[in-house]
Length: 279
Image 1 (cartoon, rainbow, N blue to C red):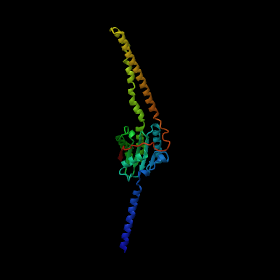
Image 2 (tube, one colour):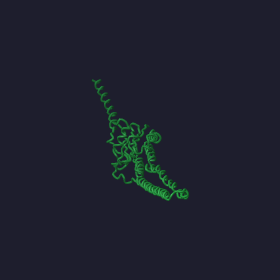
Image 3 (spheres, rainbow, N blue to C red):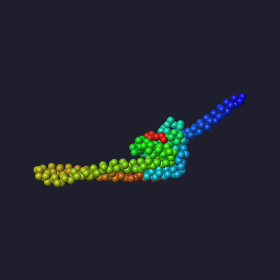
Image 4 (cartoon, helix red, strand yellow):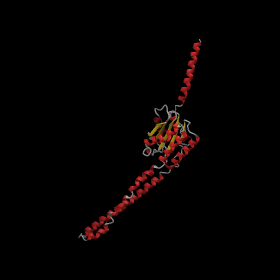
């Protein structure tokens, strides 16, 4: 009888231990739909579901990202979770969350998701299709390895998150439109350079008169030159107008201060690229 009682106590204790271990782990499981979107809740950029960031760090992150968004429209969401289960991988979780929230501006897809999974000791950076040229996978992996992971290994989650976000902001600091406009500038001086070709024509006219050409031939020649000069003036005026229009478009694209008054992300999509790393 005493033996049976001891067995029952052992079984009961084992069940208690199993429950204590199993249920906390299960409670950390979170789906993409369960992650609170703080852009909708309080118009901020940080969601610390894993509770690893201080209030001061969240304030600094929100200020840093808000200034970037006001400058050129780029959006960065910083999200921490205790685990990415039941997603197959942290990468799959990050891609799904990026597209579910639609991080970045609609049409430009200039969003970034910095995802930190504390339970899996994993950092994932997801990028929108519009900024993958300036923030390729190799760059995101480098930011994780040099700025984030070393600090996380020392349990400095505040420092690592701030350093990683600052590195992302530095990359996105220059508006993409300005970079494109700089590459277009060398095309403009080509048209004025063509103005040098018609200028020698008047000096050649005495040579033509001495060649024995008839008056009708001379009239045809100068008429041809005059028509060519008119065509050149027309093309020059059109190119000048086009250049002015391009400059105007680029300057207006840099003002995004009032583009997100609804307290949500801008509606980007096409997330799928980016890098990840452990610590």
